[in-house]
View 1 (cartoon, rainbow, N blue to C red):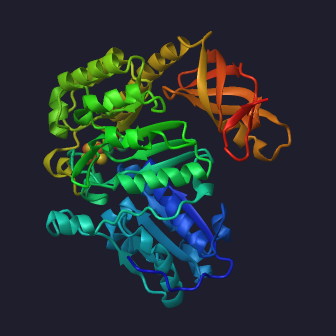
View 2 (view 1 turned 45 degrees about the vertical axis):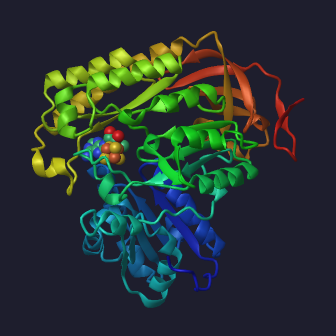
View 3 (view 1 turned 30 degrees about the vertical axis):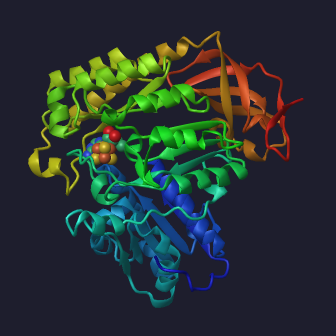
Length: 488
Ligand code: 5AD
Ligand code: SF4
């Protein structure tokens, strides 16, 4: 890691665009934290910025196209303002490397997921020398496991509260990389070998976040429930880690994403059952409801294995909600295979599903081994059919909540209140949003002081994605020293 020796630029304005998963959101938070320490100010106006960063995603081709188009739009800005520094970071940087300079010669720095700590010095060097710099990790076949793993650095230094979804919620990375090598997926290449962070470091980070007022932490890993770390000769699993951070003062709720079906062990489910701050929500992608497709995907489980897992979830943590990811139009997915995926949604009634059209990714096994044989129109049709089914099921299950009361952690203003510009309003009442312990989104009218506290809400109505209600608790005020809510 390069230690910073450069002087902070005067009034430097940073614009950052982040696409992709929660891991990217966290990476952006950390990079912005490091840059702000050096005197950079964030701007939402790309034209006002002298440093523009794109934190990119390679999981689907579409996400990459969007970034290349955005880069194209900056070509003339760079001609007009040669002092502008343009950087591409994240998965696409690691995957495309020099190709980015070929496609967009006005880009100054390309920084992989394992080199984020170098960004501040790379920006300053680029501004001073105008040289293009590539900082990336080794490929999965460029050395032995240890060498490749150490070329991907876990980067979790400074935190930047302003970049968090809300002041009460924060992501905490507990592992990096992935070793599952599903045939369609580029992540094991872009994020490198699976490496778990030390539990001591994680626990400390959670404490610091709690001291900053965070109430909910979401532990992140590509296969978060595969977490394993040996500390003082003892194996620490995710269940042990949850127990360890559970009693952190100030933390009210703990979540973790994304889970891998085969690693959903009983000790983990028992920890969720026994630790009251754990959210009763699991995101465990099934990807396909057909064994033949799961085999071509090399997911490492069958539909029967997934079914056993669901039985264990339902018996150990009754009422736990489960969400899934599906890929439609994967090579070899027949109409019958697709129907089996629909059947799985009918059977397990996922809280929600993220549905993706198969996108061939260069460098993956699927791209070399299989023909992308489902036409785009058909992928789109399957996507829409699946989405309609999932939405109908989500709405039916949400309707079960009408007339009931739920306890929620209030996150802050709802999306529509933010859109309406209510952040700056002096009216204490506003439309707020929170989530139940099962991760259902609840929207209601309330005093904005409720943000960051637990509240009881009676549910009056719903859509497929949202419960709509009214607050039934008396409103809270925060004790300024303990941060705990107190009844008025
Ligand atoms: N094409 C389409 N969807 C993909 N995903 C991962 N790789 C691909 C691909 N090549 C989806 C999977 C994964 C989610 C994050 O993205 O469903 O769980
Ligand atoms: Fe990709 Fe599979 Fe790893 Fe998930 S488990 S990140 S889909 S390779």
